[in-house]
Figure 1 (cartoon, rainbow, N blue to C red):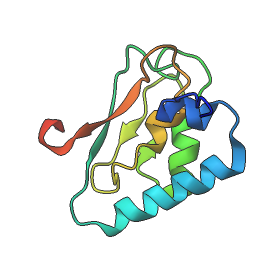
Figure 2: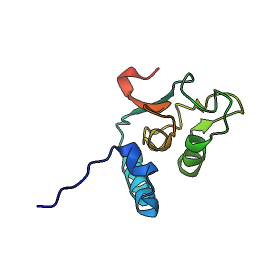
Figure 3: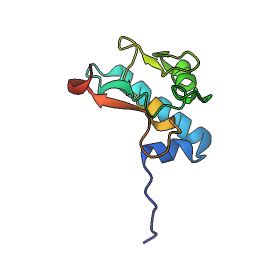
Length: 113
């Protein structure tokens, strides 16, 4: 039996799996959008966010903008999540380039502010 490497969701989206990964993200997002029970909402940790730390980074904003437009970002500040638009799809978390844990994470609904 062939050994299969395991990847985290974040690695899957950021390691160059390209168009097939994007299509998978779109399908997952569509499935999430059609369910009435949202898995959670995105929450930003500004102490880890490159944009909030003064670096040019809008990965989460750009990816969300193509999807549901739940994030806004001003230069030099952390993204702001619109809880009414966020569907908890996790695309922002998956694409965040912050080393270690992503600076933006989807937290379960019961933990969301």
